[in-house]
Amino acid sequence: MPDKNYQAAFNFAHKLLSCYPRTVYEIRSKLMKKNYGSDLVDKIISELIAAKQLDDQAYAASWLETQLQRRPCGRLLCGKKLRQRGVAVELITESLDKYYPLDKEVELARQAAQNKKETLSTHGNKNKSDQKIAFYLKNKGFAGDIIYQVLNEKNDI
Image (cartoon, rainbow, N blue to C red; front, top):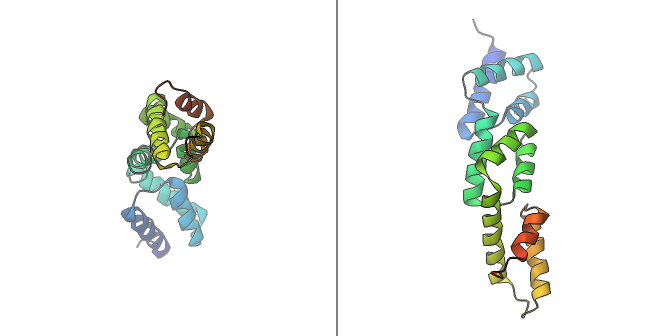
């Protein structure tokens, strides 16, 4: 007869994964908050990984794809958000390199800068406009060299 505690923890993990994909860190945290023992949590996580129901690499790829479609941001912010979800730095770097190349980031920064410029009311003051756009892009997670590149392009955003 299976252990009731094991079955309850396993069902809880499945319930969490049925809502939306999660990382190993997130599942571990939720199970630990429910006071399941670490040995039990490790066993359940191992089983979920073996069954391919829990995969941080697939999670990172899927999350990046969704993020870039819904709320484009820079690689720095994407990396930060994935780290907060417990994805390993190596997986983040690999996923960013594969799914979010530098040319795509530059293009997204250009689009964001253009959108921001359209909403600014700086009355022709280019320095003030550039400052506001740079601050906006920085808050969206774009790196300084990309911001500099976008602001100094000839096609004058």
